[in-house]
Amino acid sequence: MKASLPAPGWAITVLLTAASLAAATPLAAATLSDAAATTPLAADLLVCAGPGVSGIFDRQQDPWGFAEIRTVPRLWNFGLWAAVELGPHDWWAGGGVVGELRFFERWRFSPGFGLGGYADDGHGLNLGTALEMRTQIELSRACGDSADGWRIALSLAHFSNAQIAGGANPGAEVLKIALQIPLER
Image (cartoon, rainbow, N blue to C red; front, side, top):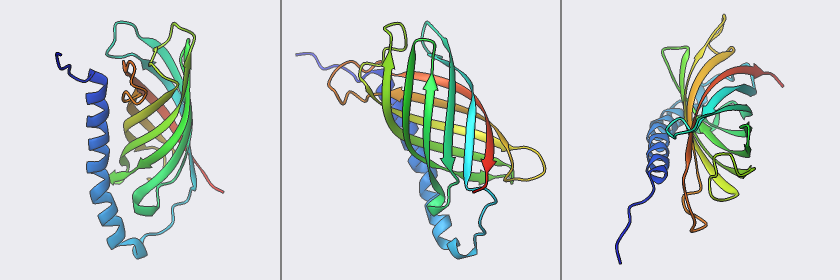
């Protein structure tokens, strides 16, 4: 019996997850050391939406759109998110956790991970199962008068089932641009 290598999508999932954990570990340590000194942010929620392109490393690319709501990262610089993402032939909806590393006052690096449901009409990304994971890395910059104000973001997401159902795991990458707007309670 010949051994086979994992699908390339599995390697991308592992790399994005490792990058998320590597970024989150110093975030947690730094937050714990000065948790008492942090001041609350002006906003409690962040609404994100924008266009994208799915299948960026595949032969066929399709337009993509998404809407997401996040809690502002507080505890160990982690927050929660819920999102709906749509292509012309498929959709994904889910939720998970997102980290945040601030640098140069207005810039942020945000790795995230989550689970969700996926469906297509036979002409979409065809990801193999109805349960799909999303790993994502994002770079954003605050605009306007405040470092905690609205932001423009560029993100790369990988959707994969990690062969949890034992079937095909083609995976897909989506490149997205977002407008992020903070909301107060």
